[in-house]
Amino acid sequence: MVPADDGREVRVVDSETVYDGYFRVDRYLLQHSLHGGGLGQVVSREVFERGHVVGLLPVDLRNDQVVLIEQFRPGALAAGWEAWLWECVAGVIEPGEQPDEVARRECSEETGLTVGRLELVARYLNSPGACSETMHLFVGEVDAGAAGGVFGLADEGEDILVKAMSVTDALNELEAGRIVNSKTVIALQWLALHHDDLRSRWLA
Image (tube, rainbow, N blue to C red; front, side):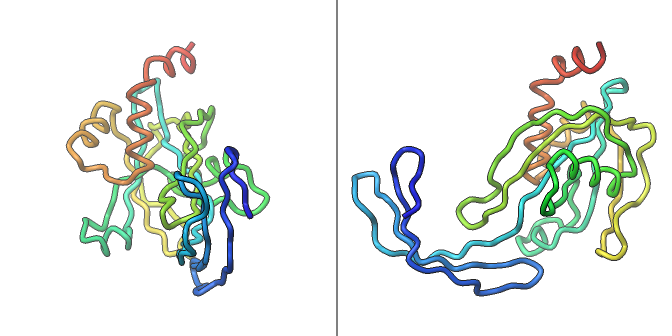
């Protein structure tokens, strides 16, 4: 049994790895507590083991700009959406790394920019119905005047376009539905809510 904080339980009857390639898929046979009491029937569920990730929205509050990146996304293609998406920086947390370290490293690799102060926006599960991935989402202080060009690691097939835009323009893009991935939507909405407070603290 695996107990939850409130006394509810999950019984893992069996588990196996059914695919192990660039990502991993595990299949679980399990029972879990029911709202009405007792345990439910044994169910089979596959879980996509994506790893745990960091997202970072680079922000230049002196010039009131954000930095976004555009890259090809096969998941968007498979969903029938536009395959090149505007996003914030992101990367996988490797064993032994701290989320803030990954945020700084990925920003350097994907935009060429150095991060100053960091602010945690949220920790959340990206798609808990099918995936174990957790997101640590930050905003980070940068000099957007140095932003631009194409970045990424060639040996990983990355081709990342970097663009600085005003906070107003970025929020307009969000409102118009042209920014459609969750980490960037959440980061920009957080920035809209906390913009004045963040400026008062970072520019004091």
